[in-house]
Amino acid sequence: MGRAPCCEKAHTNRGAWTKEEDQRLIHYISLHGQGCWRSLPKAAGLLRCGKSCRLRWINYLRPGLKRGNFTNEEDELIIKLHSILGNKWSVIAARLPGRTDNEIKNYWNSHIKRQLITNGIDPQTHHPLNFNKTTVITMTTTSTSSSTVATQLDSKNSSQSPSSSLTIAETSSILKKQNDDDKNNNNNNNKCISKPKRKQANYNISSITTKKESPERSLGQNNVNLELSIGLIPFRSNYMNSSEESQTATLCLCYKLGFHGKKLCRNCQKK
DNA sequence: AAAAAGTCCAACCGCCTTAGT
DNA sequence: CACTAAGGCGGTTGGACTTTT
Image 1 (cartoon, rainbow, N blue to C red):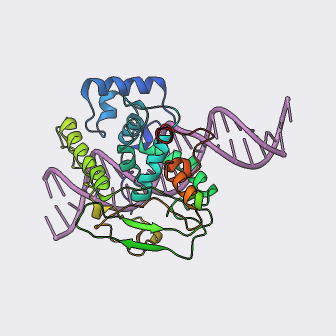
Image 2 (cartoon, rainbow, N blue to C red):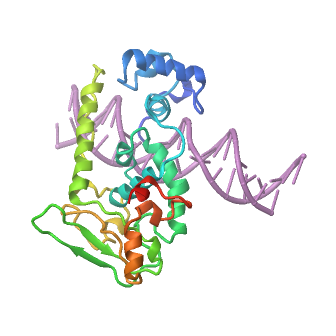
Image 3 (cartoon, rainbow, N blue to C red):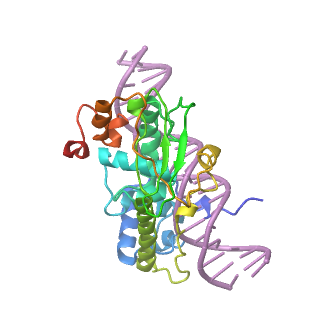
């Protein structure tokens, strides 16, 4: 027997939200804040399931949401974070102010993924699709905090290869901030008296690998121990001469992946 | 102009985690 | 310790819209 439904579906509206429903939800939350989603629909006079209200609020009505196109900087950040975290959309979204996990997930699936494939890069592993010869994983566990997992890829698509680089310090900082944010949210949102908002999952480096990860991610990276370090060093192709190398070294990841048109983003222009 | 194909994205579904009992 | 319930998450769907034929 399956799990009981989260709400009485026979008496709830489904599908697209009307303006009136939106207004009711906004009005209720502006007065009472976010609390128990399960009891909110009834209290707000909505014939909706609590989950539906939560989703509508988080993905659409919540103040501070950005609408419109993603910037090149956002593209770059999403790719970087995805190369580290995989499909952890909520964690990635936490690093992009004003963007929701759903939005990023949709954007990834409809834009970035296709773009990566077009450029010969596997969107799941962030490796070139045809790489097979010399995958060199080196791990440096020095006394400094800047140890990285270096993946040098041999590919003829050299100019389009991944070149993101996050040091362990950067990665730790991201994950630490996530924890801090979660703690703050918990402090701010405990308006539900009947049941305190439960603690959110604390992500740490050792928890990056997840239950749903593909074998490629957990094993395909040659059993890289994520507890030690994560990161990709800037790409250097064996096929590049020194001038090409120095030229591409000054360009940001999104440019190398082909996300720019004919213009450079601000990051590239600064360099 | 109409039909077909492709794209986008809001919303839903079902599973997992975890606090409370 | 086992069970329950609520929140949260990632994957998927379906309909509206756009582009192509």
